[in-house]
Image (cartoon, rainbow, N blue to C red; front, side, top):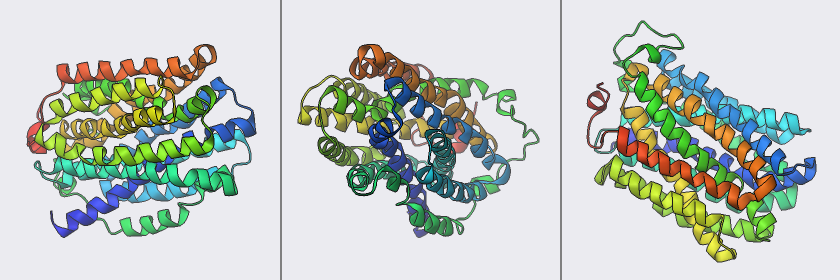
Length: 398
């Protein structure tokens, strides 16, 4: 790759680093929130679900990248996330905490989505899977850092300190990203007169949006819930203390990192479809085992696959969601499929799992969500074509 591509890859990877950090941070501090604000299982589910509404609202920012360009929207989201994460740490009440975290996730997920569009448009067919995989690997690295530092921060300074540590690096990132060039494909895109909210639904690509949205939803129903509530499950139903949970999350994140790093190459060598079979099979095993085994190390081993799955399912879905649409509709279609249709399950699944856990416990409630990735894999093999090794101009044809 060229020097500019390496620099682009590094800058894009930071977005997914904070996505991984933020994704795991909320689940790490959930027991502290529950204690401070008196939350039961259902209340914890409501907190996660409401914060996740921000991931749907991110669609409004992502779709702007088709109108105003990838670069200005990407550089603007980091400022919004910086302010929102600072407000999260300062929030004096639970409603204000939830509102600030909702906004933080809106900006963060918009930045993450546009980063995926950037990576897809700026790397050739022979390296696109690797580029998307590398960017997503940064998410696992963020989870590792989160698993290691959050227990120390919460023990020494309280849960609020978790949201203060990244403010200065985020400001430096905002400055670094201001020099990013616009993607060549956006600059050379075909003109389009239809820029309304329903433009993609009036195009020949509307059925693709629904297909990918259904697959995203089935996937998110399990991966979001399985990570969000694992600490609650380990503490309340398996008797692990904060040290044991922190050790399990750190070891599992470290164990998952090289596996996630290999996903991009796997998708380019074996293809999106065959690679997805391996990824989804391991994800299903990980979710079921992580909520049914007993003991520190069996649970840790299962959590390796669970954390791997939460990150590894994203590169193939990101690849299809960017490869199967033309440049002038790419961000719009990606936003509808992922953020609107797909993230509806991201919001509802934790809520339903929390309500179910009130009656059957976290183990059975979350284990059931493993049916989602199974359905998603069936839909992938039924609906989605192989796109590995093909340029975007070819894969985007209807």
